[in-house]
Length: 202
Image 1 (cartoon, rainbow, N blue to C red):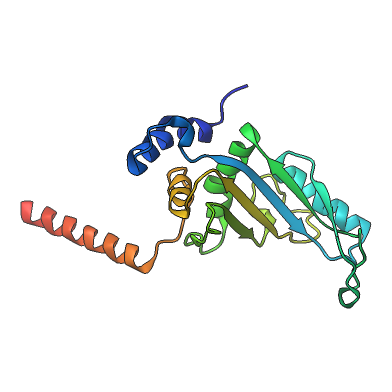
Image 2 (spheres, rainbow, N blue to C red):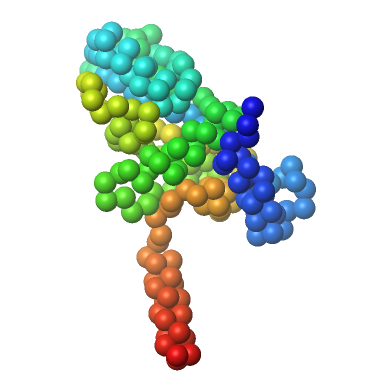
């Protein structure tokens, strides 16, 4: 089986960069992505057709059959009974995981209208969760015939010990994080200096 492009990028480019930046000597200690979990929830009152539709769309996007998640408690205010289906999830590992991330980073996210990057908010343990409001940004989903818009959470679990390492790992893989105001200002200052230097050399 051919090695995914994103996996090649990790092995050939990302690993050396991470070793250099964080002074890592042991190859086994280099931060890596362990798994990606895709969750999609729906109302407890959803009919069987909608539940089937959500499952089919998740299969299209991930290429893997999802597992149905069920309520652990009964909550009368939400008309929720214990054991009732409330969503589905898929856990991706290995080559399938890298293929999914490549499509997410390079195809799906840029399709979001007025896209300006995603927030760089990690959980404090090197893991990142991204909320996707509309599943139709994925190329596998056909706009025609869609009965509803599905939202989902993409949870990226890494072996990084800090959020800084995890952010650098995902950034090197191409994850389009939104620049902070200080980073934007620094980038603009650098561009201004480069333009001034170019003018002076003419």
